[in-house]
Amino acid sequence: MTANRLSGVFVACAGLLLLFLIIPANTETVEYGRMRPQTIPDLCAILLVAFGALHAIRPRGEVTIEWREVLRFGLFAVIAAVSLVLMGRLGFSVIAPVTALVVMLLIGERRWIWLATGALIIPAVVWLLVVQLLERTLP
Amino acid sequence: MPDMDVLLAGLSDAFSLVNLLFVIAGVMVGQFVGAVPGIGPVMAMAIAIPFTFFMPTLPAIAFLVGVNKGGLFGGAIPAILMNTPGTPDAAATALDGHPLAKQGKPVKATKMALYSSVTGDTFSDIVLITISAPLAVLALKMGPVEIFALMIFAFSVIAGLVGDSMIKGVIAAVFGLLCATVGIDPEHGTPRLYFGFFELFDGLPLAAVAIGMLAVSEILRRLASAGSTPRSAITSLDGDDPTVSRVSWAEYWSCRYVMARGAVIGTVLGAIPGIGSTAAAFMSYASAKQASDEPDSFGKGNIKGIAAAESANSAVMGANLIPLLVIGIPGSIAAALLISAFKIHGIQPGPLLFEQQGRLIYGLFGAMILANATNLIVGQFSLRLWTRVISAPESVIFSSALLLCIVGVYMSTGGLFGVAVMLVFAVVGYVMNVFGFPVVVFIIAFFLGGSFETYLTQTMVILDGDLTRMINYPIAVALVVLAAVSVWWLGFRNKT
Image 1 (tube, each protein chain N blue to C red):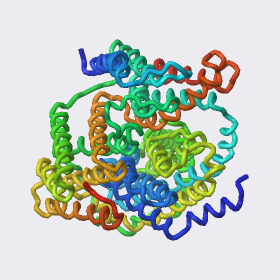
Image 2: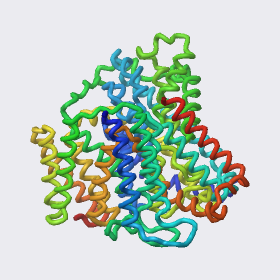
Image 3: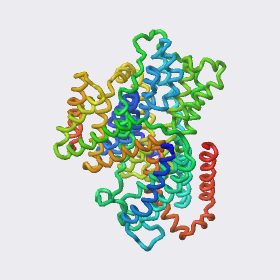
Image 4: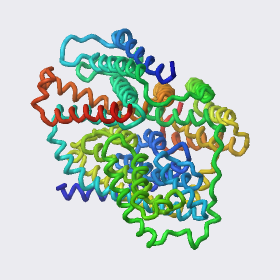
């Protein structure tokens, strides 16, 4: 089964999950009015099941997955998530330069002038712009 | 006929010093980001939206329009100098632009791109200014039933035209609608799909979703693929002979038919939601080649090839705003982002805009014309600067852009929860891209989801819950039939 076809199966299963589990558990039941709170979400879930199944049966288009890129994307997404959590505890001024430095080092930047620009000057400019110029707070 | 007082007041707002400065800043930012392959005006607009919260409405919108217009030309610079389009719509420009640059005329190629871009854009803006108000008057005659049917039609066209599969387009649109239902139900006031997060009572934050899917997703993808594809060499501007670097009036005038055709193609396609500027540029390029006496010279540095592509892709921008201003449906992702900017400033796009916010709209029109003039002037003088920008390392550009996204969403949502939503949707956007589900369709459906539900609710009340009564609304019936035809034509017939 190709990845393209699998994506249709996944969409259809997600639709079923929404229809029978997620939407009923997270939507209040109201017994009056033309449109219930769950009407549109249910309609969307039904359409996801129908079109997901259709796509699984007759997949269109090409899907090529570059696993190396996917893994690296996951790595950078985790770095962003961790820096977000740490930013909430330690603040932007500490974590932003570290995040920028880690990201730059991971993609192979070794020139100290660019590392300094990205890790020190840019976060400082952002801080000046937001805190001093716009008078807003940062985490 | 618009009220002359409102028109003049709007234009005077547009030509105020503050607005002029924001337009200049927007155009400069747009040309800058357009010149950097991988960023582009859409990502720049998404990042800039939270920063416009704190601006007055017209300068905020004018700034975003400037970013978009500047980006349309900026994308042509790396296309010509590196054969790497800064934006997808500049890909057609590279076909003749890069060969001309390789012949030792990079400045001439870039200037022709600038002149034709501004020409196409100005034509499109004039069409927008001329026809949008009369069309809005017509649109005001439509009730909720017709608007609901129109939305169905727009969704079917967008889902069919964007991407390589109608089914994937429909799935993306449905997923966008589903995400728009998060929060308080508009009819009963009960919360739904909030998963215990009270921050979601107001729905998923627009800025977080847009920035996550359009900017952060792309930044993380570029970071993930950094180093695997070496950058192309830049054709230096220094070697350009000054005697051949300028575009003479005769050369410009010789391209008038090509530019006019491109501007018309761009305007017509731009007014149809979902087609986009890349299709317009290639269509215009193909028609210019077909109409030429020397079709073999295309692809080898023919200046008319550049004119055809740039006039068409830039003409899309103004025309994209026609459905936005007339019926409140965005024609493109940039228009969808403008909708979010309008909403952030408490303005609901649609036909009532001309009645309720006439001054703002005529101010916007003035700002668009001003942005075209600014694009021309800034582009003339900053070409060498943008060439330096292209050479800046990706490491600095993308790490800085990531920080700006985090800060922008933090400011607009007032906390880290919005930033977390942004990251979740960055991953969702990436997965959708990998599997070929069009993110553009998702975003447009997500932005229109609230209105869609409202109009559906009103339609159900008007029709007393019986959809067969729609037969009494011939325009609505025609639109639904058109939607069915477009599904068949665009999906099951052309994409089998």
